Length: 275
Image (cartoon, rainbow, N blue to C red; front, side):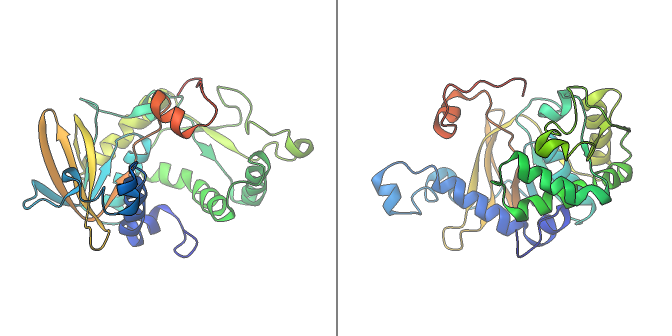
């Protein structure tokens, strides 16, 4: 991230394959549980579901797994700014949208002259545990949210009060040093409005979304470690799709998966409010 400069554009233009390969390698490595798998880092890659097929059912430039808010934006930027052919795989039988479709529809607005103060705010409420490059990338891109919203015809007004409470949430840190550093988008119709507006733009750009897709497995070249596609089940039919430029995983969280919460959240049981 530091060498390339993490942004919506640079990720999809310059480092999509690298980013996907790193994510895929980490995901596959994390699946190994036996001593044999630990001794052989290719054990997971060589499983049948991860093997390169002799014939692909389809191919495209970029495959996006998950059609929530992150998948929506990845598909828009990939097709619009990067000029790539994009296919989205979504597990829902219709529409998709995830949390982004059912939430308040609010998103953060950071003015240019408040960027430095907002960076200090992130350091304060995360107790310095968030890496500086991540803070830098997040704030710089967040400051462009309204630019993207206007470009894609999103309906919103700027509000200084969130529906759920004060903004920012921890404005009182450092004796109130962060009061008033951000605004939020107030969207009539909430996330549903935003989802339908962006979905229309996605359709206009010719991005295809395939529904009822589940049990995805990344397909990785065992020699180069490059992620080259996805094996998945649509309905009851197993399919493969080749990704010439990379795979982007936007699969959401695991708030309701007790097994994953127990494995990765060391405070257990862990209860969530909302999504």
